[in-house]
Amino acid sequence: MSRLYTTAHRTVSYVSGPLLIAEHAEHVSYGELVEVVAPTGQLRRGQVLEIEGDRMIVQVLGGTTDLDINTTAVQVRAQAARLGVGLELIGRVLDGMGRPIDGGPPLLPEAERDLNGLPINPVARAHPSEFIETGISAIDGLHTLVRGQKLPVFSGYGLPGLELATRIAQTARVRGSTEGFVVVFAAVGVTDREAAYVRAQFAEGAALEHSVVLVNRAGEPAAERLTCPRSALTIAEYLAFERDHHVLVVLVDMTNYCEALRETAAARDEVPGRRGYPGYMYSDLASLYERAGRLRGRPGSITQLPVLSMPDDDVTHPIPDITGYITEGQIVLSRELERRGIFPPIDVLPSLSRLMNAGIGAASTREDHRDIADQASALLGRGQELRRLISIVGEQALSVEDHRILAFVDQFEQQFVGQDAERRSIDQTLDLIWRLLAPIPAVELRRLSAELIARYHSPSPGEDQSDPAT
Image 1: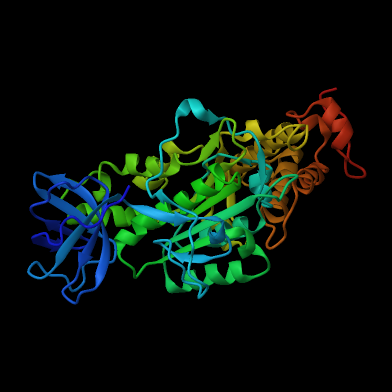
Image 2: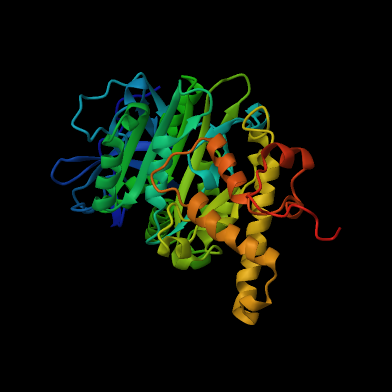
């Protein structure tokens, strides 16, 4: 329950960055919402981050510009940070605080929910097991996304991570059903150009009709960047667990979120951890990522696709490193493929989906899915080794089989990974792998059973399918 303001003024002793410190804080709890009254009378929302004796540290969500320690007041209400939620959010564009910015009518929320969400009892979690078709062959075929999974995209500055995220948000669906599928897309700390791109992409076609879009710009206070993902996940939790929707949450760019976390920690004079990031960044990111999942006995689910930019393309940087520990795999973008004009530039070999096996097979995709993915990955790995070998000994040292593998890798990157604006079903994706394998004799497809080869493999005319060893 909420109550009226109990105190109209707190003595402000410190203002820096997004934070202020107010003295004589009594009957105030951690995470509580406050109103900061600027000298001009303007009200700004804030949240209590820490309580030290009779002092409280407040994160001002509207920024501390024009605030001073003499005339700034803090009003307290006994209520945690909450967000209005409801079905009418679908089809709307909001800011990072969940307020409409699309020029539409005011929101009439059906309920209010805690921005920090409620922890999911591990016993109540259901194992992710249903295939989500993104329409992207490199994901659907080799690194399948399933409902309830957390599958991040490791991008780099200048790589099309945002473009890939919007593409997936527009084309993803639960195979066999489009009813109740909703995308919650949160653009965190993006530039004005990127914000315009996101809004334009969702304005095309019917994408916005089944989406909730939150846009937080880089010029807005760091505190709002910290709130934006929580707003998106609070909306997703309501739609999934109370309205039984299948929700895909796309968070772009989590690197901007982590930079805001570092900025706030520096303003609090905290002891920095790795590369200046706070030591609690792991638990903070986990509090976001672990809000994905499925609950036993409920049809709804939350699937997360966070996108982050790796500084200097360094996968050991704290942000991707920590993210990899918490999530269930990663999709890695390649700068080399991007330079060659291949979109999406997904680097298949270092990418991984740890829950892929739970979402594929005869009952979900097709009976040949696992084996054909293993065969393609094996040939791609061998192809990478051959490319390195060529730089040492030259192409003349390669066998006929080696040349076939190199040709497969080149065609795989151009025709399978690169698909531009085309959307492919999972059947089209798997059939394309078989077509690319057609020039390779059956005896060289060592990861495939004779039954699958007989059913799907169509050798090119004139190819010798006999075993050279015999």
